[in-house]
Picture 1 (tube, helix red, strand yellow):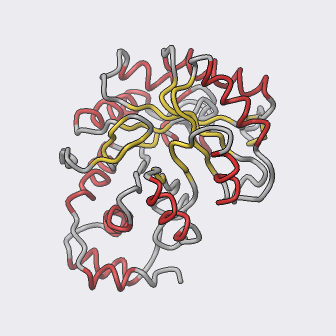
Picture 2 (cartoon, rainbow, N blue to C red):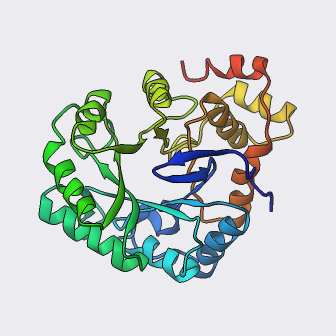
Amino acid sequence: MTQIDSNDRYPLGDRQVKRIGYGAMQLAGPGVFGPPRDKATSLQVLQQALAAGVNHIDTSDFYGPHITNRLIREALHPYADDLCIVTKVGAFRDDQGGWLPASAPEQLTQAVEDNLRNLGLEQLDVVNLRSMLDIHHPREGSLEAPLTALAELKQRGLIRHIGLSNVTPTQITDGQKITTIACVQNFYNLANRQDDALIDLLAAQGIAYVPFFPLGGFSPLQSDVLNEVAGRLNATPMQVALAWLLQRSANILLIPGTSSLTHLAENLAAADVQLSRQDVDRLENVGQ
């Protein structure tokens, strides 16, 4: 399996993490609900990711729920000293797998305690507050109460760093008045570029930006230009899409997810794909 470039790192809180990490969401069952189809392979994917050099895993206790965190613990505990595990809170799953807000202080405290227990940790490296004002897109509205609750858990030593997810620039600025924001995790990829200005703003502050659905979400990115560039570089379209993100800005950290060993290797190999200035210019118009 391709080893990701050990020199290509960016700060995440007080850690230096490699810019291609791993997102654990797809380790749960269909719809991110219930157990995996193949538990043994899920454990292997996690172990192979670390063997290939990954030191940044993104997860949440509402994946499953509880499933991905327990798999991570079974596969990787005791954890490597340089492994940064990032989780998120602010939602819960109903009995049918629906996604519901959970941002009251007592709900956030319970979520942090659940993450700690299921991961087998005494302190969480990074906790992202996931705004559920709109489940699909950032929406303006105050996050002061839930963010203050997380800041209090940070003061208690249960959380090391705090990030934000599914948020607007205003919410980030307001959040920074309450606590240091270590990272922002929003929907962004080659064809969904609403956060272009925000990425540059965060880069100027040295804050990591972590795009979720970097390959387009549940429907993979489709583009004739993407396919043409990939064919010429002897790469897959998805590798080119990831390579474009890596070259877009140094503060972008990738967390592509998969439950397949083959796709894991392909995702990590995106670090070897070098796009020319001409390639980048052509890809800039995808989805525009």
